[in-house]
Image 1 (cartoon, one colour):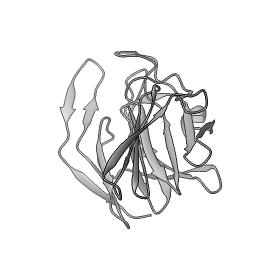
Image 2 (tube, rainbow, N blue to C red):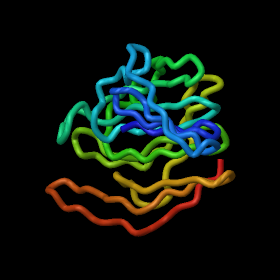
Image 3 (tube, rainbow, N blue to C red):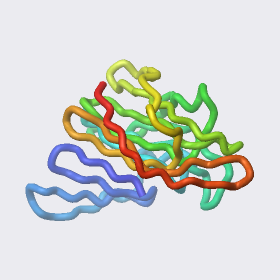
Image 4 (cartoon, rainbow, N blue to C red):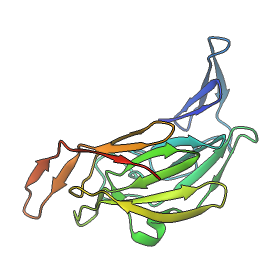
Length: 183
């Protein structure tokens, strides 16, 4: 599933068309699947979706359930033209990972942390600016590197915490700390 919000509408889709909920009308409508509206990427599991500057973004994730092949894909959805377009992902340069965390703050997208295909866990955070189509490294979490972290944002701050730390040999620690991020 991919979920975006644009103004008073929520778009929910899975490649078979969009269900659109209009809060001002308190009603649902259905936009059938057309070539341009179906999700164009390979990720079918654990992909991320977020909205910024009136557009939807989705990508990363796995190509199938329980796959060890994460994708580096990153796509933008324009609800006005009803089309998807591919954008460069920071993972394109840094290698694929799973268990990422993502949030939007002040019309920018923040993605990071997670673990690589060789189980190396990271604490990095990257900022995507939809206006300039650029990625920048912004911070690393001050605490323990993690995967599968929880994240959310207010209008001025991002929050990241919880998750897991993996060690070679199979040990996994559950993390309970929480961190505040101010751009």
